[in-house]
Length: 305
Image (cartoon, rainbow, N blue to C red; front, side, top):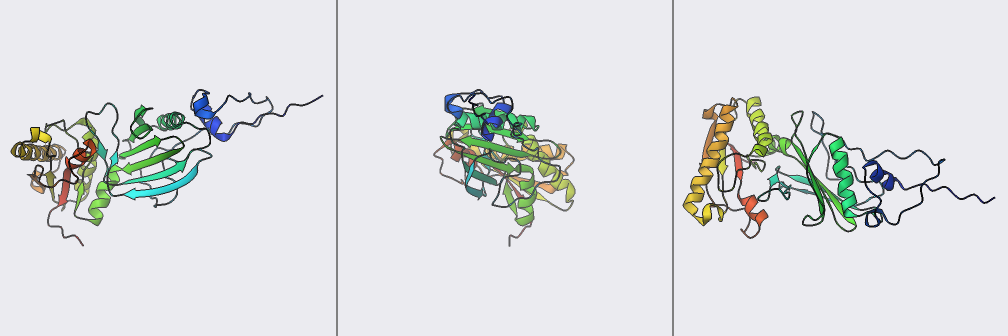
């Protein structure tokens, strides 16, 4: 009698099965025969961690603490950039940038694993770990993408997974920790998480985590005094420079009012609106304009080293 050898599926396939993904040729190749009843116990599914109450520390190398790679992936580079993370989704009216700095890790995907399958696996695992998945797009610019946010236990962490043909990027920013770190090592920071409606000075709900982080910093340092400086882009306020300065002044005041309503003395906060006087980038793309349209928090009487 001839025994047919049993089939043992690769660990990556088991991760996808545990995430509830379908067997599709473009995701994992041709359908393989079912494993025999005597096959070994399956490997554990992709399991991600929620941010801990105490912020994690990690360097420029190695995996991100909240986003390990899929089994079978090959490292393909790292990056740390002193700019916020683009977490724009299809539901956003304009680009959305969060955090003061971002870290990313690049990987070559396991053979035969499609971009949509990668982002679906991470989206499922992020939800299971308590993250709020803001978007899961199969046709986002640059490839398939999922964006998730964790805003519990005093944390404000964003992650983004972007997958292309055979590679994927895992990126993250600790928006809450970014405020404390920036002030510990310098005199100012760009509070990318503070957002307003288009040509409007009304704070959007997604500003809450960043404002809360700033409020906690001010509560923990009674002697700290700040200046809130708001900028617009040259195309805001229908291109009217004077109207842009007025709008930026109103936005700075809106931040001051929020902090005062949350038990920060008004005398510790000054404001200025500088319109489009100091753009960070040429006003050529939507992302350029989003980065120009910003709120800076500056320490009063601070001298940078």
